[in-house]
Length: 635
Image (cartoon, rainbow, N blue to C red):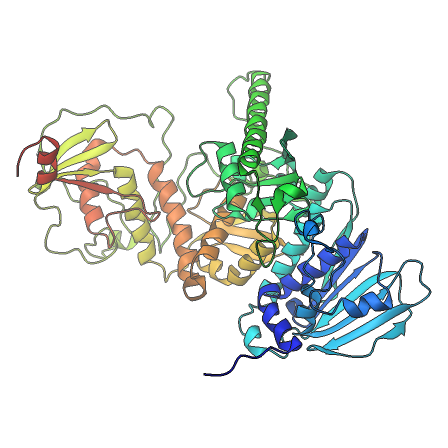
């Protein structure tokens, strides 16, 4: 057994870097926090090759003397803590004294600094933990730190980094977080010598949020009523349900100007919104001011998580702030709608086109399609089936009266009733099942007897094993989905947009879309980059009718992000599109109860007949023993 020994300072710093320096964005976070703690009013960040080649952070803060510049590279050297009491009332972003030595141990590090009233500055160089003699330098007041060749001496760490585009998106996200937390500070960000943004200092938080989001999001901001609780105050902005995401990318939470991710806060946000849809997360900008003595920020290596000493007060204040804001906003919406004069019932005037170069709002997205006759199905393609019949009127969408309830053997129902035929079938392609394969000789519905419908929503079938309930629209969704999937090799028909849709995105979402844009073409959607974090949508699938292009695209990004998309990107992108087409096509159809037997026959011919593409059940089975148990009858 090897003997115990003390690690060298360089090795100890490299071990600590495993927690502090996860990726280039971690370096940017630590350096920008140091700049803000130094009282900087302007912070400039420059990166190259996603931050691996170069990270440079320049500020106009207080600067350092020669002695402090040399000490800052020593482990656990800090100006923030001098006693144990200071640890429990932390008012700065950084305090451990680990960041600089950890970063310098895995990179080529250069620090240039000068105090505001000093006549000369100082330069400190460290290469992989090896310190060089400091020398005087004629630099501007403040501090400039350059980190180049990150992980050059730990190649195993570099293997875990993503592409330069992905790493750059994480860097930009980190800068955006600090810019949102400090609107009174100017932030400038350059990537590969190109200016990404230059945010002037402002006293208005809404102005800073508007500068970092698209016009539609900025217009939808709902101010949070400032709420004060025991040792805590809450303010910020909420966003409506239409901005909800499958991930928490839309949630920006700050505690004492520190970006945090905390499960307790997440639950409080959800409770404040009330009955929020499962699987979605509300979007908001939440700012909390908590007495330093009531919160412990020293519980996470990256200081992302915190621990509250009065967690109940924190939860109650957040819930109260969000709930009161939503209630007030709802009352305002009701009053506003009541004040709108009634019209003569004619069709509404289309919104005017957005000026060239501006980002269209949500209302504009629905007008981005070529003009067509209302409620008319798209023209059938030679490669794909025509899925949609003319949309029914409002009256026809109501439930159809039930026919008399009597058993109907399935063999009496024509097999083609309610069936969507492929074009090549009409041209003599032969008999096919619902999924486009050769129809099996054995009837999968043998033994099913149609009994009628339940509450005009569910079809009932008797089987030798018991009772089966079918949701006809969910079944149609599965049928249409598998028909389209069977024709995946053929490009999806697309429609060119008369006015391309321009969308400003979060840098992380932009990186995902940029990575998978080629796969969208197969699904009939043309997406091209248009400047920093802006995309241009030039075409959409012909069969896809969207009320909000941005919402659909962000949902697609969330699904790609949450999945193992590296191997299945093309399939997932395509199936997400056709899943949305199938859902919209199925749920706008008028389905007569008499079509239920034919729908069941098509459904059972599918590869996965028991659920929709989204995972909702299409069939529910109640066995005879289960039914007997409900009545207390022994089997």
